Amino acid sequence: MGRLHRRRFSQLLAFCRRNGLYVAGIYILTFVLVLPLLCHKLGFSTYFNKPKEPYDCLEAENEERTEKAKNFFESLKPRATWEDQAKPIEFSIVVLTAHRGSNTHYSLQVASRLLPQVMDDEGRSVITILNSDPQPGLNEDAVYLSRFITVINSTLPVTSASRSREKEDYVVGLETALQHNSTYVLMIEDDALPSKHLLNHVRFVLKHKMPGKLLKSRSDWAFLKLYYPEKWQGFGWPELPELIIIGILGGSCAVWLHLRMRNTTRRRQSLICTFTVWAVYVVLIVYTVGRAHWIELRKLSPFMYSVVKAPGCCTPGVLYQRSHASDLAKFLKSVQCSEAYPMDVAIDDFANKMNLERYLVMPNMVSHIGVHSSVGSSMKHFTEFYLMFKP
Image 1 (cartoon, rainbow, N blue to C red):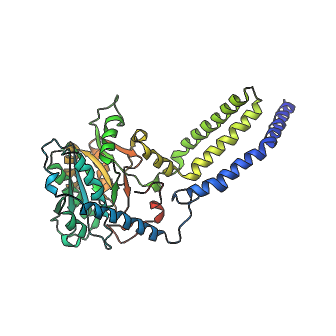
Image 2 (tube, rainbow, N blue to C red):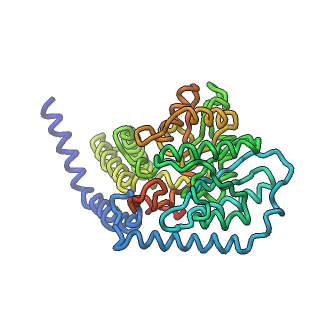
Image 3 (tube, helix red, strand yellow):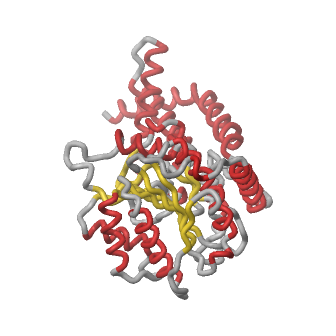
């Protein structure tokens, strides 16, 4: 038996030596030439090459988007031609904005992306901007946008606790949206740039992608989050089974192709070697490109969107059903938010208390463009903004 095993092992080594040059060539071409060329601008790829001035590039892109937004509003007709159309409202959209240290014009960009969709909706959607700055006049974008969109200035008293103020502004936003008696409430922060087809894609997801058609009623969910940070979408221990399955599929496809192309039965040892080489090859490609960027590719079609259980983090873009939005506003009024108990955790607690499902749509339907934080003076790490598709 030992002699048989040694013989099979030597046959396997001989097969690998015969094909080693070919395999090495493919590996070198892929991982030394092709992938570095394709992935050097992808922030979550192994091959990411940091630009000399990464923030300068981001500022240039921000200025380009701002210029497009300004051109849109300069060509816009008066508000009265598209508002107040007598139709049942499906989406009541509230954009939460505040003055930032440097005028980045985030809210101007968000409004220019949302308003065309609202106008095309012919009265099925309505948009409101909540200016939560204690000194409303400091928010130049909100003042300018009031010529085109309904802008509400927050009357809340000034508080030094930024997390508490954030929660209170969110409550005002929810209550503002609820006044329109819409089917859904869509809360968007001013640094969350929506996709150009956000409303239609949300409709598609609600109709075709929501879980629980057989086990639970569709009304049994608290919210649908439209964003989750790409930096937390990478491979970790929970995603290890994904890599294993991908490797098995890649190796199996390679074995099947070899058998089909050669139209003959091969030795088991050579099949094992083929499976191993190409399973590892596929896994390395998937891992080095970065899971976040593979998820991004699904933006190419709404048919590739999926809805999963939502983690507790993040509220740049969240869709609520009207009844739950009303209950959430009451719940948030009853709790005190702080650095130790931020608002997104409180919203998650609300869902747990009400025994409601929490969902997240993937890939992201809004892009986070906020390099400058509105809560603090810090800047986010530049890698978060180097993605496959520009916002």
